[in-house]
Image 1: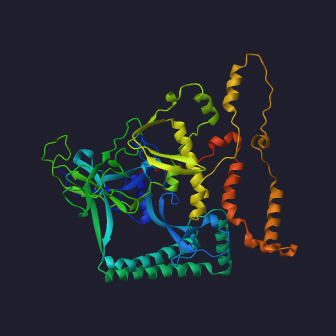
Image 2: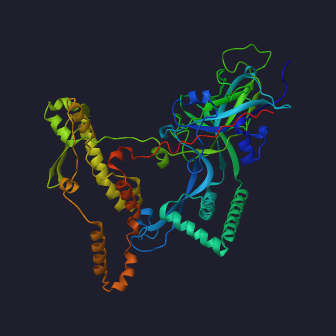
Image 3: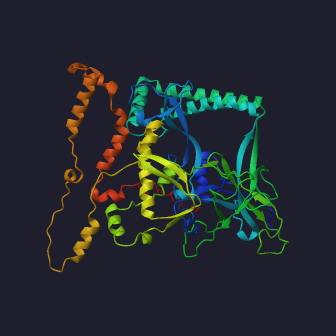
Length: 569
């Protein structure tokens, strides 16, 4: 008997309850879901246990807008290391801006270079009483397409929309502050919490939240009026391959076409392991596909298919096999009906330099030991240590006189050989040389919070282990290793003396003599140094034997989705 009931391509059964609670959807209304992994061989783990995936965290896996607010002027130093300084439109001194993150609710998918991988998962059912499962043998093709939604509007109308959007972003930042959903840490978080508690105590908190949300509704209504008055239309685009490999374009497509002209990725059926009695795909028809977060495809002008600015969504599809068509290995093996899922939630790609994303894939660069290099360089001919060959068709030659480059000239062809440790040392030196220039030239003081250096220490583990291995059996050693930092590095200081001398020096320079006037020193507060001071303190607090383990904790963010059990009625 031929099944003529319509089909439904929905979320996997173990996500139905979540979409019911969060979106009010019944099983028939659900949409495919994303699942997240941190290993490149994620497919193997997913097939073994489809439910075992990383949990999406709103603080990590959502897009945040950046809101810039004029910063108050508390003094010449306060806030330097937490603010962004932008050029003044009147060619005056740079304007201080407080940069805050405002949640948008949009899903963020990290890149493979961030050690994150994703699958889109759906399940096929017959839209009949009892919502029975459709068996895989009735399907002759399964896949999904990545689409993007955008809008068309007159070019001259964009300026007005930008003003409205800035207003909406500012209101979002205000609501995020009141509801404490914007990320904050340290003193900023403490002050925000105190301000909220003060509002609650005074009875003004709820009124402030209500007022902010009313302002948001009014701004959105204004944006809606702009849309209507300018004839703005929503468009749905799919990626259409061109006549040449890896070259295509985004073009307008139908929501649920019966002919697939878009670039489609395959979906694969999950077959339960018979040795796992409670496998999540047992008695189900679950499909999954790897979500592309990067691509070699570009349009005709070289613009990448995917970027970190566009909103994307995925629609899954299956094709019903016509019973009267013979089976073939090639997919599709007939021109049966195509059944489309509802679109997934929209998402954005993380940027390549996303701060949290890059921290998920740590890299260790070992700077060469100068003493070891000196000893090695004296032991063998130079030619054996320079494996990097650089061919210069024209050599750029100059001389250094009194620290200045003089007598520049372009010479003939030259071949140079460099040792890799030499390139590494110079590159790191250039980084350290130009970092303070970049920070002070453009007032990018907050960049100093993106580095953490462990204070000087002496590594003796390797040498100690080697010498202990060389001790004859039965020989006992009782030794104590001490490191004299002052003798090794030639400096020492007393923190209390330093603070007292600094305070007295600033007071004398500012003309403050009386003890009672020392409160005026707040104008010269060193609060600006707190973020950097916190980094230094964090480095000081790390025990010497744990310095190698002081990077980001990769396991701290690996929280798995809770398992859903099959309900037996």
